[in-house]
Length: 274
Image (cartoon, rainbow, N blue to C red; front, side):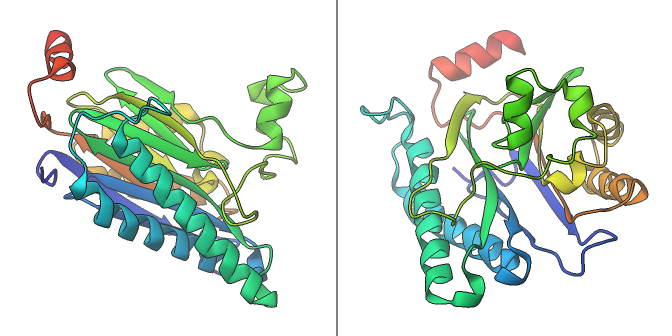
């Protein structure tokens, strides 16, 4: 199914006010309902190369594999949908590409990237992520962070050393504990959930969340929910007004209509909530 008319997708990226170059990369395929954001790391070692290779590899891999998948099938080993396995395999492939590229070029050794991927299918979404780039969902009057950061700061919060409020002022906020391309093997966290009409999902790099409070993000998205481009512009402007210390990337998508491939139990469940 072509999802271009079912889901609106918009992405913007900005260098910010401090960095000399933009190491974030964003990309999407509206027809497939695929959205990808990567925040490169490594500076002179090629963070922008790592993020660009990652996004290109994931999109190309999913474009090749996803159309061959029969909707509704489950991988017996993991219990995930075959669509989730598709993006998982794409991330594994991207990790190999970035790692081998870095190993072949001494100037790029140590480069890596965070990654967050959204894949929509059959009124469902799969989310895969590595690092501290995030996915949020706005549903009705609530915004929720869907992903959990792979970062030292998140581990310290989990262990009770910081409250979330104290963490915002910590010097450790940008130290990730998992990244794509650093090691030969990496594992992405994968989640699956039901997508509902009028849901808005946001992917972002930490250049946004380090500078703009979640409440301000939510109010901006709600205010401009009918104009995703303006919402993304406003969020980037707010991040720059608050210092613009890092590259800032924002991807927004809104569910406009049912996109089930068949009237299965997922579709009936969604109908109960409408």
